[in-house]
Image (cartoon, rainbow, N blue to C red; front, side, top):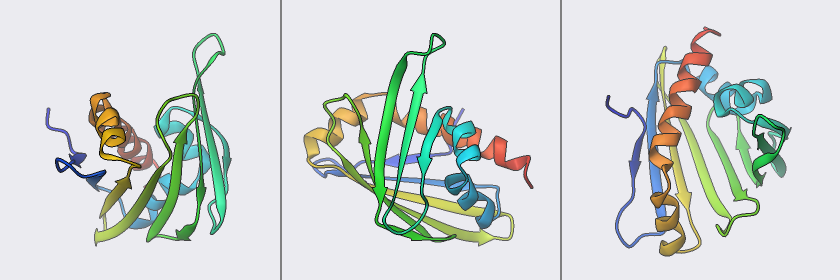
Length: 155
């Protein structure tokens, strides 16, 4: 099955560009990144905080079935323009990975289709390459598939 989420990583660069077209109106795609309840569903994580505003911040946490925290991430949101753009930092706690900078841009393609472009900048080429060794592309594609499925129900 073809991955609908495309991950482009040019050799020797400290960035990746992720694109995905959704069969969703722009407003619903944006809402999937803005509404804490929807974010929790498609990301499969607990949203501890999500302040979607300029100078806002967020925190996510995932636990195993026994209640042990297995993943925690947080960041700040220096730019938030509804239905257009979210600029944020992303830090995975208790990992060797440095903070990354993410530029999320939302684009209307037609009344019922929209596109997300994520431009992620890493501290170094080495840090980016370490991330790419993880099942990163597969994971973000699965998450975006869940996003499409969950938000379809809101149409």
